[in-house]
Length: 134
Image 1 (cartoon, rainbow, N blue to C red):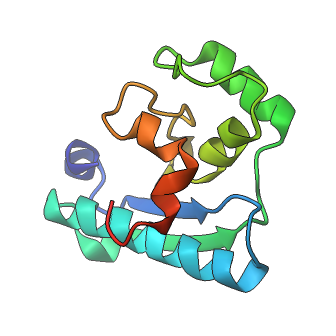
Image 2: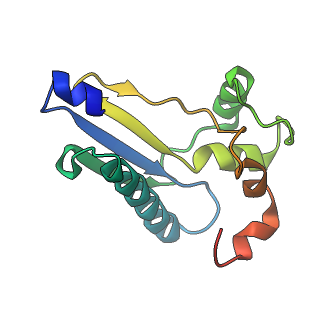
């Protein structure tokens, strides 16, 4: 984004924050708002101007279907090897995301799950959700 702003100083990023289907609509809405704000904070720390970033929190309204997730998972170059391809946890993991869209080009970020990230395996374990810090 910083490089693109040199080309087009009016460019914007839209962060569309999502949540999986578990829990109520209200709690997932609040969760997706926090998720979007966390990504915005990271981008601002990387010198992306705060005024060029918009957040759209959609909660669980725009979830990827199981079929969408399976398609993404098969194409993912860093797919997690420790999860079954038809696992509900895989669908939940793919739906806990923030999609990044560069405007005015409408170029979207990839939706691959970062299976090679240090935290990837932990996020598939059910015990982590009760922890106070991750």
